Image 1 (spheres, rainbow, N blue to C red):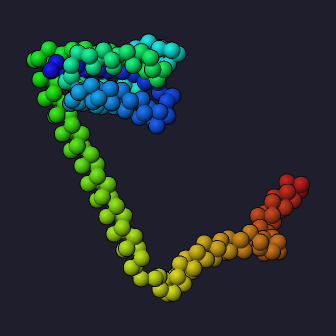
Image 2: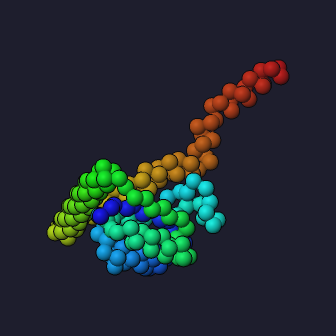
Length: 196
């Protein structure tokens, strides 16, 4: 059986359910026609080279399958009738290209599976760390009252330091005058001498 590759673009405004229904509907055409899928891959949302129906980006999906020649013809006919597909392209792969594409598809699937397993492992480790931190926080002894009293004294300390400065500013005027008197007396005596 020849190998075909079909790439189609759906609008980014479709809901997940509508997009899934469109892709599944097109995939059933291949399976009902006796085709065998190697790849049924949602490639994700990508920017288009030029706007299509006023859309600047679209969601790409790739089918790689072996089937009789009637299957891609029917698939293309259904795609043209569908309002949920912006563009599509189907090519028949030569035998060398088909083998290389299948090998690459298997490698890509294995790589994705490894990445998903690694992401799941990291998420599990993070969950364990969070649980251990929560357990340590719950098992930590409560703060003793002596430490709380020390904290209260430390909080009051800045106000005690500020009080002497406040008292110095509020000195009685007579004490100030007493300290300033020698200067005032010197000034008066110098005035008297000048007047003589």
